[in-house]
Amino acid sequence: MGCAAVVGRREVTISESDLVRIQPTNPVGIGEICEICENLQIFGFFAFRSRIKGVYLSIITQAFTYAAMLLFFRNETGFGGNNGFTDFKRILGYSMTQPLTRVTLFLLSFTTLILAFIVCRYIVQSKLGRVSMAIRDAENRVMFSGYDPLGYKLFIWTFSAFLCGIAGALYVPQVGIINPGEMSPANSIELAVWVAVGGRATLIGPIIGAFVVNGTKTIFTGLAPEYWLFILGGLFVSVTLFMPKGIVGLFRDRILHKNPFKNES
Image (cartoon, rainbow, N blue to C red; front, side):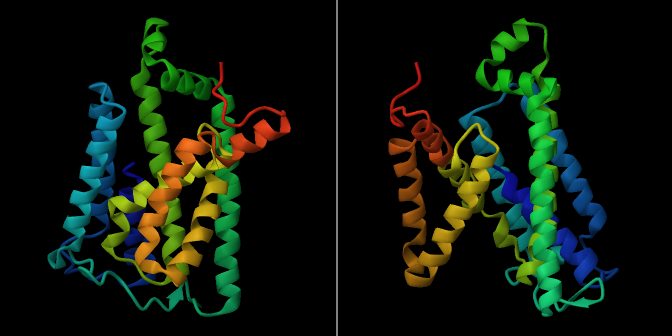
């Protein structure tokens, strides 16, 4: 749930390092950002060692994310306060307004998505993935079988933060603006909606959900932007009640000629 904090922090990092000149008088620099990311890993270690999970872990990570957002909103941190970083015109010497540059960034994002999917699929099919799924379903049984869940949880936690960091690095050059508002808890909740709509416990599901939800967002924020959060909440509730397996689960059930709303035995 706290992935928006990692995405937002990586966006600020890539903005400061690659898109604008770093000023030596900035109170907060790249070293401090790396230290924050390292502290996130330490936080995950102590949280998982204490066996904090479920809704409690979600609340803690959201609180941590919100605190980080408020910190980055402060002008003295050197990240532009409410305005953030704006007016990005060039990246690696190329104009960001050129169609070729924008197409290149889009293709780079698509390639990164495919590579991330392949790596995640490899992890899921490996012993590491099988143990991780077992921890998700029955952590106590895994512990009684002689496995320590801490290392597996910490790896998934760190690897997901790594993917979020790459996403943040690719996000800023394409939108041309970044502010600490990207670390708001609403963005983390929206990512959870992607998973719910696309299909939980699948790899392709969140990708499909991201396209569906963001496509819907593009339409309704243009027609009725003040109602978008209500529509997003209604979408999440509707999917949870009437399509608990998401789009992927519904497709699978239709292919197998089963009732998509019938619980598994």
